[in-house]
Amino acid sequence: MTTSSQLSRRTLIAGAAGLAAAAGGASLIAATPAAAAEAATAELYPVKPPHLLEAETLVEYLRLRSSQWSYNQYNAAGENLGSTAVTWGRPGHPEEFANLSQCASFMTALLERAYGQDTAYAWATAAYFNQYFPPKDGSTRASGSYPDAEDLQAGFLNASNVPHIDPVTKPVNLRAGDIVAWDYDPAVKSTPYTGHTVMIRSYEGTFAASVDSQLGITGVVGHLFQIVDCTSSPHGGPSLTSQTSIDHYRAYPDTRAVIADDNSSYTEYSGVGYGHMIFYADPSTDLFVGYRWSVNSSTPVAAVATAVSGKQQIAAGRVNSFVV
Image (cartoon, rainbow, N blue to C red; front, side, top):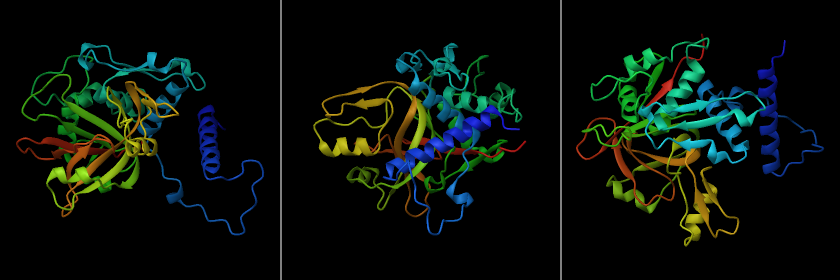
């Protein structure tokens, strides 16, 4: 029996294939059979984890909404004030989708949506997050509140002892669905803006820039990723006085920064969407040593897994349970 969700998934896959063909210049009307078709393999169709599919569903349906930015916003009032709301509607009804969240509450809502109490997995609950991602400062989390970015960072750093999460210590090992979180200041808890967290959507390869030298690590390697997150500051708005900056932005855009066709202006919005970030690796160990907010950011930020004075803390985790 074919379910509506299976039909929707097939439709999405078919649509994606059609778009890819169009982008490559292939005809969508009458394709010529290949003389020797390449055998299908798992590598050609990588499996996306459920929480990434849920994130993409939310982003894409919000992009279909009239006046999207009235319904897709970063919660500047603070995630711990009880006003976080991430809503998935019915297939074919973009008007039912909405987002009001911050980076960490968005990630938590995604995990609850994909693996929460009402799913077959049933592990991503408030009790789970309170036990394995408790407030980093030792306080008690208020009922209905979510982990902050620094709480996620601390949990991922201890991921070997956290059920359903595996640690990812090297940017080169990041893959679709992995979540990266960092603490802006390990010495204090600046509620609710303690840090940031993003989900990897795809790996775009290495990306070198002259500003990389600011990290003070000879041979540091920048790895470029497309990410999904909720933010008040898009990843990569261009400088309209620099053609290089404009070209970089158009190559690696953010869905929340809209540039005019003639490059005369651009407008930034907040909320959930896709962007591009760089995570730096030490050339000798491949471990995290920093990040850059976008390809147009002029300053890389030092970030390490263990506490170092004056440096942010960063860690990544991978959900490892997709089978009941």
